[in-house]
Length: 467
Image (cartoon, rainbow, N blue to C red; front, side, top):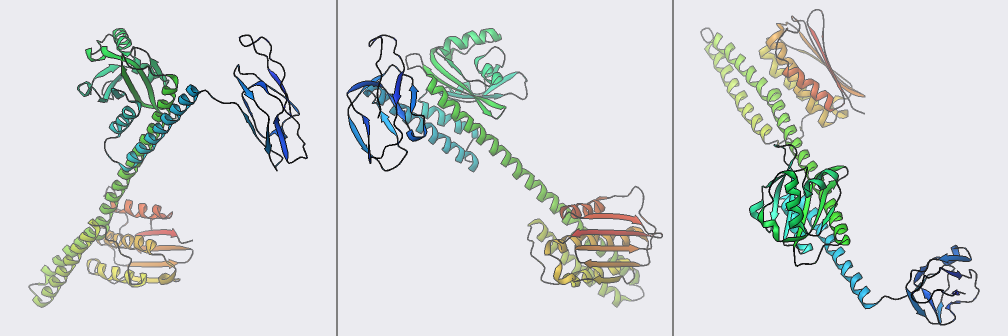
């Protein structure tokens, strides 16, 4: 049973809180909400069975007539809603709901547009805000990196000729919002702007004199203020209210987050491009430059035998031309990133790389395989190991002055490549780009790369985990 105490003080006096007595346990399938015609404050009680039997509800100075009504129920918990709104209140609530829905729709639209990269980011935000608010003027100001302590209006819709106008952060309304991160309502922006601008030592544009109510909110993502959003109405138009400011501030927060996310994604895309360029440069060095160098040495060898054995020289030149054709194909493949998994086994590819390097070395290379090289090594590991092997053999041919080279490829829990020569060792002060590329390839696969003296010669060890 719900009962109402008396309200003292009359209709115009101070209204005392009511005491409502609530019966929790009722065996009947219906419950009485009100048993007499009386005046009680508007209230909503939910989950009544969970509250104490006697509950105090403040009287909100707004009364509604209750009539007896029986509510059927079969559950232990139920809700009682008492009260009704006046037509004006319903109209106000409906208007707020529609405005909130419009701002939410605008937030969703700009988020989708910003992430899709459609149009200028700040112009999208400005145009949506101006449209939803029905404001004659909308603008966004951001920090001027070239002039610290100033803001520049990047976009001004409704007074486009003011685009690019600079103001100081100190002594201006927009600067105050930018510095504090707090939203601001101004009843007469034309007069206030002139006052603020006067404080800053600048003169407000004459176009601002006809402006009335203004709402200025920060484009704030977390603790970072990316700029300020300004909406202005004319002097004879309705003022912006607190609810307008709250909706605009929420819209600006969503827009700032979308801006920040879009900027982060653009940075990520630029990083991908840079990494791709780095990969192309590395592949050109590993796959192309070494082959061109080997071809050049083969041509020098052919030139030396032309007087004594023209037929042999002709055959060597023919092989060099074939190698150049293959190099052109490698360049095309690298530039256009047409990477296809090799159809040959890793063992055969290693032997082909060794065979291609032997003319430049001038001797046969010893190669040994351990473990399931052809079955347990994933394609990515093999694709990184082969350029390392070619680079190592090219370095021996150019710098080591070696007479023997031993290669060992081991597959197990790790893929291991060892290249050992008996040359003069690592030269001092030489270029290290090839060695750096080997180390980068190892790190990409969480592996290691070492180059140590072998007494005599050099020992290279390149190793990456397979499990």
